[in-house]
Length: 82
Image (tube, rainbow, N blue to C red):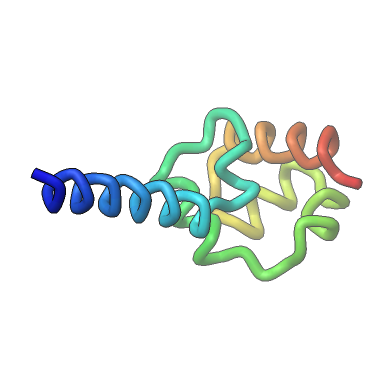
């Protein structure tokens, strides 16, 4: 029983650790799902600060995303850039 409890707690810890390690600022942008996030991460070449200087059309062209996703990213970057 002790071994089973230990196995369960290790699995839970590893799952939480994996989420923490692979988290991106894109996860915090409302309206962007997992598949869109993967596409953005494949195409992103600029740092977050440079993306914040772009307008919605430039984000759409650079990342190949829909206008609603570009707007959400634009608003998030404008509100959260340091």
